[in-house]
Length: 253
View 1: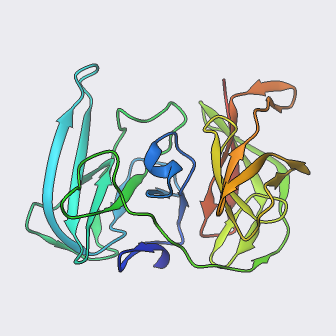
View 2: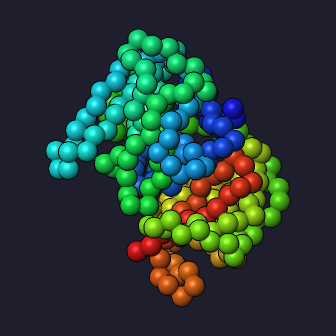
């Protein structure tokens, strides 16, 4: 297991057969660097491991009025704070202990997903007296790192329905790999508006500056039309990989 982030003395882990994002999401908790999504490399709805340790103190299933779809909300007491997780149906009950790496539950299609969303766990660190709201999470932190290698997109594509994956030779920074000319860029460009910079202060992709840094590590993307082989696309999904087996995602309009 690889430590990917922490907050309030709680460490968050992922396996090498995962990719993650802090900012590639439209939701405010990601925009404020207060959430992380953890994906299996398979991009399938499979059993998923626990990224944290703690005791389950709350689990409820909420049904959306507009479409009848369900969302599981699971809260773990991890000592200094609570951990809130969404988009996974746990195999455990309230009162059960879960440790990092345990088989936690089954990923499912959340009513909050976009057509191009891949299966994942959404995770936040929360104050114990405020663990259910959409706002109010604690800011996540990750280790500083030195970049290495060189980013290069390849002419290898995988059609996935709502999007196309493009294979890349990623640039690295510590335990992370991703896309970016001078360091890793994490975010939905330009459709989600904001991104995270790792190992760089220059948001440069394909030789072009794609935004402006507005605060530490956070970039506001420029508005830009995206094309792939002459076809206009909605945007490019940029994630953080824990392996060199990395991709960028071109999203259909």
